[in-house]
Structure formats: C-alpha cells, structure tokens
Length: 164
Image 1 (tube, rainbow, N blue to C red):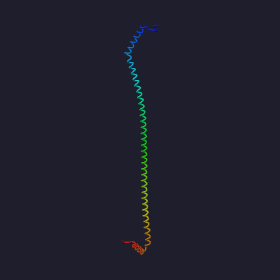
Image 2 (image 1 turned 60 degrees about the vertical axis):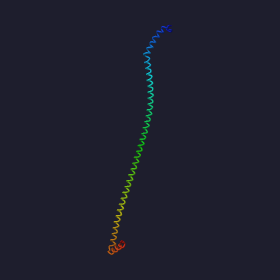
Image 3 (image 1 turned 30 degrees about the vertical axis):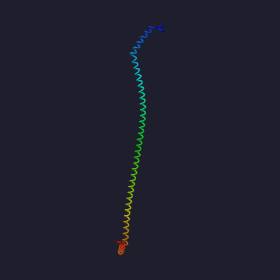
Image 4 (image 1 turned 90 degrees about the vertical axis):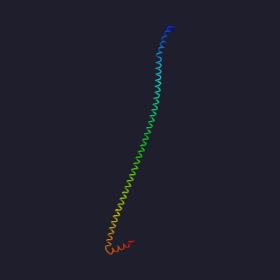
C-alpha cells in the first residue's frame, strides 16, 4: 500500500530531482524552446500576412490586367475607326479624282468634237464657195460669151457701186 500512499521521504526524494530537472530545463531548455515557438509564431504570422498581400496584389494585378485589356480594346477600336476613316477618305478622293478625270476627258472630247465640227464646217463652206465660184464662173462665161453682154454687165455692176 505504500505505492498507493507514498511516504514523506519518497515524496521529498522524488520532488528534489524533479525540481533540479525543472531548474536545468528552465535555465537551458525553456528559453530556446519559447524563443523557437515565438519565432515560429512570428514566421507563421508573417507568412499569413505575405499570403494576404499576395492575394491583394493578385487582385490588383487582375484588375490592372482587365484595365489594360479594356484600354487595348479601346485602342484597337480607335485604330480600326481611324483606318476606316482613312479608307473612306481615300475612296472618296479616288472617286473625286476619277470624276475630275472623267470631266476633263469629256471636256477634252467635246472640245475636240467642236474643233472637228468647225473644221468640217469650214471645209464644207470652202468647198461650197469653190463650187459656187465654179458655177458662177460657168454661168458668167456662158452668159457673157458675147462682148456686148459683158459691157452691159460691167456697166450694171458699176452703177450698183457707190463711190465716196
């Protein structure tokens, strides 16, 4: 029954090595253990803060990426809009140049046709005048074959001319 209710001497002899062990542990083991636990707690705390900061940075990067994508789409749309405007301007200028060229060609053709028409009319008038002179010459030669008729004709023409 001594094991169940130990004696006072046994308790003292058991307490003494326990207290010595506690003092040795306190002097040499508790501080390093507590320091290592504190360091571990600090590193875990820092790691959690770093993870939170990383999450926030990832959120910021994602927001920044979305903003960059939005800006890139806006720039793409602006570039495409500018390209369409330039294309429309070039097409419009080409149409205007083509119209001007067509107008110039038509005007040149009209002028050429007018010149050829005038030349043809002049040639026709010249031919008509030549034919008229030939006919008149033949008629006069026929009518004025006689000298008396010639003198009468000249006298008649002289009467028609008024001298100043």
